[in-house]
Length: 165
Image 1 (cartoon, one colour):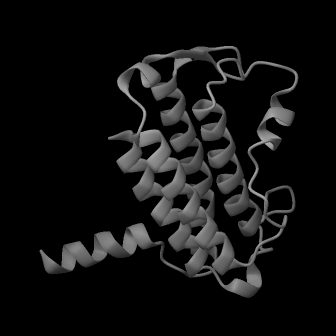
Image 2 (spheres, rainbow, N blue to C red; image 1 turned 90 degrees about the vertical axis):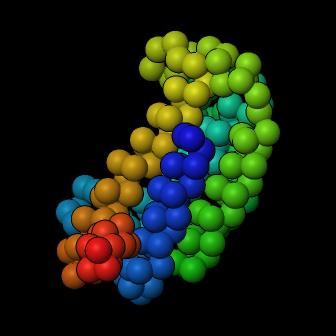
């Protein structure tokens, strides 16, 4: 269930990237925030790296080397991606990681790890945390879409469903 809902979240993230004007990926609402493109890339990198750690059996993320550990799982891509490539990589990463995670059994998900903040959680709880992290940043991306006068895909679907009901 968590993987299925995360796949939907990821599809909507990739759609947001496709909906945003390709020439404006450097847009940010205020100077101290990430750009739209940086948000998308952060979602890609964090989701791929954190699930890579889980899949490799890393059980302690509360180490001084946490950032270096994440680097091992970073996709070999240029730092800055165009919108089409970013959307494609978001989908590919979810497809790959989704398959790898779906192949794991209940014992994998019930295993306890230490999160980077020192909290003990199950791998399932960590996976839910990764999905929630993406939702947070996807929400930022949706605000950027709205600032550009673009209705996010989730709202377009809801409005279409209301019309057909």
